[in-house]
Length: 196
Image 1 (tube, rainbow, N blue to C red):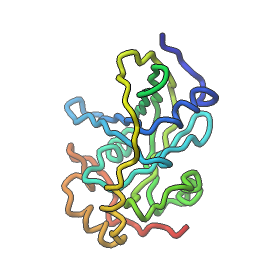
Image 2: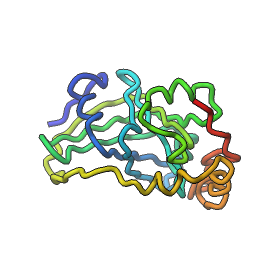
Image 3: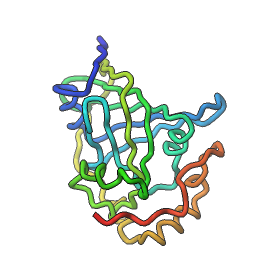
Image 4: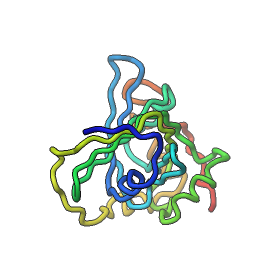
């Protein structure tokens, strides 16, 4: 039923890149800490960088749990499900790192997301994940669902923000600079978005 893979290529890569949504799971080291599970979408915001490295764009929101957990321990699992076509679930277990706007790697990483306007979504970080285990399973119980389109709401909410107003927004949110468990989250003040 399940199979392990050494790298993300061929049929596996094609499957991952064709999905419209994926999920991220992280947790703090504290056994009583909050496990975080997040859906990620938006066409063009995910990229396979090489056979063992993927990245996705982390947009503005009211929490920064994934960032906080990655800063503390780096553990992350990404999961894709087939909601159409043959049943399949793919998981990438690995180590992740948030790359922030003032990082020297920012411009090169952004080149992997040519169809995304970073100003429209309050882009705050690029999450880079190095795979340690790659596995697929059957997905027989995953329902069929039809993709219609990306929601326009995120862009319409955040495209009017400047770097300064976005920083103010993040400062007002309880769990952006600090996670629900008190871990350091998004470093503030927010650096300006680099010009591309």
